[in-house]
Image 1: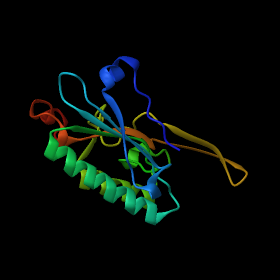
Image 2 (image 1 turned 45 degrees about the horizontal axis):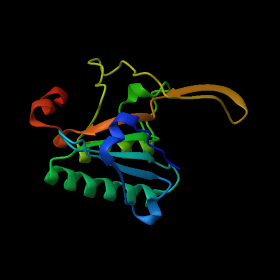
Image 3 (image 1 turned 45 degrees about the vertical axis):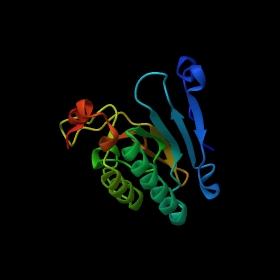
Length: 168
């Protein structure tokens, strides 16, 4: 399952509400809306992207696109965070090998116009901090590290004054 933690002060005034997700995506997606008494609303999709179920991956992508469109129409910022099981760049995997999940993740990032909240190093060969470490594979030592977990923002849902900070 997926959990999204929200700091107590952000839940004051009944400003945090859980949004429905399609039944087949329960356990893969958690959707929250934070609506402060003053200011811009924020929607958060917490996620676990499976590596072994292409149908669920496709349904998750469809749902994310629908949420993005709604957030753009309503002027709501959209964050997506969790275990993507794919990297944004080749440098984000210690093996420098690119797999199918990486290619699918990068295509989804492009489709949704996602950027990492913390930005990217200007040098495309510089890895970001790894979030996954595997010390053995098939019973033998094979240290592999990757940046599979990320918090990304949909650039088109940012306020106009902030969108330029994440230029492509």
